[in-house]
Amino acid sequence: MLAGLSCGALAPQSSSTYSEQLKGSKRACVRTTSFVKAKASRAKTTSLLRTSDCRSYFQPSRRSTSVRVSDERAPFNKQQSVSASTQRQKIVTYASADQNGGVTDSSETDVENVVIIGSGPAGYTAAIYAARANLRPLCFEGFQAGGIAGGQLMTTTEVENFPGFPEGISGPDLMDRMRQQAERWGTALWPEDVEFVDLSVRPFVVRSSDREVRTNALIIATGATAKRLGIPSEHEFWSRGISACAICDGASPLFKGKELAVVGGGDTATEEAIYLTKYASKVHLLVRGPQMRASKAMQDRTLAHPNIEVHFNTGIMDAYPDQKGRFQGLKLVDNVTSEERQLPVGGLFYGIGHTPNSTLFDGQLETDKAGYLVVGEGGATNVPGVYSAGDVHDTEWRQAVTAAGSGCAAAISVERYLQANDLVVEYHLDPSAAEVATTSTAPSGDEPDDATTYDPSKTSHKGQYALRKLYHESDRVLGVLYTSPTCGPCRRLKPMLKGVIEEYQDQVHFVEIDIEADPQIAEAAGVSGTPRVDWFKKKDRIEVMNGVKMKSEYRKLLDANVDHPPPSNGNGSAPSTPSRTAETLNA
Image 1: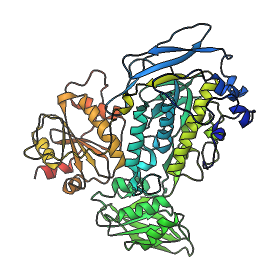
Image 2: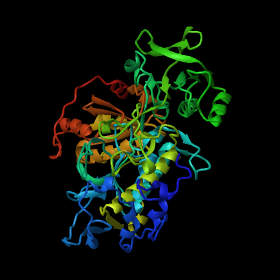
Image 3: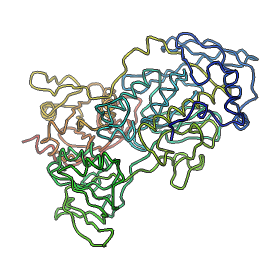
Image 4: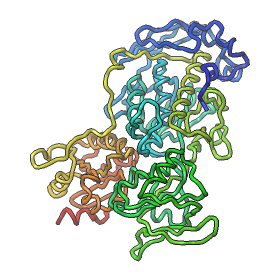
């Protein structure tokens, strides 16, 4: 879809021709960014890109001049275009990256150049391009709404078709690298959900779970969410036999060594089926039509795998339980003959497509009947200054590389839009800052505690030895995080959760349990998927949190169970529940 697009095709719509737009431009399609010395005025470059529909939202154009503004607390020099009639110098302090990959707000900000809602290949690529254009974008990565930060690739096993990785790369590893690159060039990354957007006012208002900002431009990269099948017992068995993430849940004791089923016929379904053969005795791929829709390479690999059986023309009516109410199998129907049958399996994994995450913009942006954003050149929506990138508008290609390409297009479009309307505030990165290694959310490789390394005075620990010791001896609240090596959401949760726990100083202990390294502990706890956090106090399990939650939810639980909550946090409550882990630890 993006292949073959010229730089001119990415410019905002204008009545002028492409050749007219480039007339007088000193840089044409190639922009060289300097982080040492500010460039001269760019008015000539963009004067022909102004359109009447964009200008109607702003004050009449006035000649501008550049004023150097400094801030000693961050490695940026800031250059702002301000009205020559007032010559008013404006100093705005801004957020700096913290060790958890988020930001620490230095002060209340004024108006941002561009805010990016969403991450994944589209959001992170847009952030990289916007940051290298000296716009210092603010990126709300998301947390729960629409899935985990990093997008669908955080739940993808091997990515074999992204250029530059001849041996392939895991989805979480690829997203880690993109995130680090965006952060390196000065993007402010906020792992928060955006809950409200107002596109009827200028500047636009974007409100997250933790803050509100105003911005002159917006890039929407909210992606799409995995669909559910909607069978009658889906809610009953969700996370207890039914899952939408093979790499998150496939290694759990609930599924190991059993026959499993995957529903779907595309690349997602075939990837999950192949991945699950690492743990399952056999995998049944249920395809509702007469053929798969996956790429030819994935079809060949799936059909040739000795532990995968493909069932064509097969629909799922429902799941059924055993005598104890546990997931036992599926009720199937032949879509050609209408013949019904049962398939005994230990679990069902979904790979049936996605729904665009566009409901946040209902009534404000144009969408098609399926909810995908309707866009023009460069990802432009029907609201000037708002651009889309990735799967939230892509109804056809839906690939990581095309999502990245659309993120690039959206960022370039935003830069031109801001220049055309005299809205640019430039942030010039200190050259040395770009060379500083950024925080990685990839697995750290830390070793589990043993008798020689265990230290109860430390807050964070790993492995079953530390868990058994702390469960019996600690007088603090104890948090147990269950992870698996390939779990993308685990990578995002672990540093965030550690950051929250550090706020409570010596009142909380934290233990990470790798369910592949310590399967007995995971099985005793009834872990059916990762990430999961069990909270204990005086050997009683007070709460179980499956998946990734907002920081406020973890703080609420801890505030209700520690003696001295941090003053900035509110109080919450958590009911006590029986502990299966307690039975094993007491043995």
